[in-house]
Length: 239
Image (cartoon, rainbow, N blue to C red; front, side):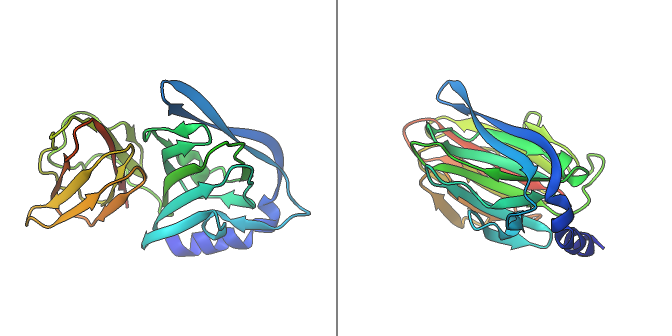
């Protein structure tokens, strides 16, 4: 039923492309101040309109069932195709056109019931990059799927996503944690990070925007191997 709903919505692109004018503004933290990336929704009836998952700047880098991880990159001066959002999305911003953003996390669950069609542009001077987590399912109510080994409340929590944004000092590591949902560890700032399973197998992340996908029930910890603080986001897709 879930996959049918996605296919059905893709068939409706021609209808969704003609919408009321509305502005969508993504505000992201960038070195101590807030900058904005504007995406304008308008009438695209005379243009090519694609689904989010088919827009070439929103590149799918991993997929598990109804969950999609996208590496969104928009070059300075470039504008995306008009594209439809009809699934909740979690955005971990790596760079704005103005420079490094250090991994703020924001969810837009409203797309589930209020699809939009828009374009995304980047005025530069640098690359715009976002690691986006898309959930094509119907979400989960309640908190029975809460992870173990996490201290503090999540920074984002809704039926589709749970996210923790952490700053780890030099040599600092998290507790061993276990998540009941598919989980993505995203490095949000420069540095060197190890994601280590309970059997000792380690994946090294060495740049902002690097990520590691963990399957449900797979215990792991995250350690800062560098000599400066590093930001990591631990993002769950709730199914």
